[in-house]
Image (cartoon, rainbow, N blue to C red; front, side, top):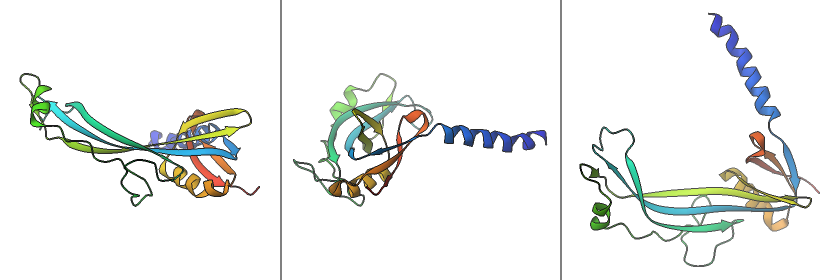
Length: 171
């Protein structure tokens, strides 16, 4: 019962700490990128059904850098439901390639095609420029603001290590 009385105090302290650790920045100079990629991976283990941490080997990878929602040059697929452009799918690893990486006493899983996106925002304030990881929502907000160069207010994450939110502000 004593633990239940302490819990609200801990939650309040953590919330205050989180809120105090975030800051904001206003900028008119920004670029959002989304690195889309396809990667073939194969899991290897002595027993694929019971081994909790199989070894994962990466084979071919292709990627495309999306900038501010503009169609990238070259051969791309899309845009998808989120407005992202994707690379062509890399060649699937052959049976020989999969078996070459197999160690004795281990078995190989089936090749899996992994889809990944990494979002980043580069922005300038004064003479300094910063590039931080971000999320899809921030990327989309920048894509919408970019053509008009609308100023943005950015909410930075804990220790200013990421961009959590972007909102348009009037000039």
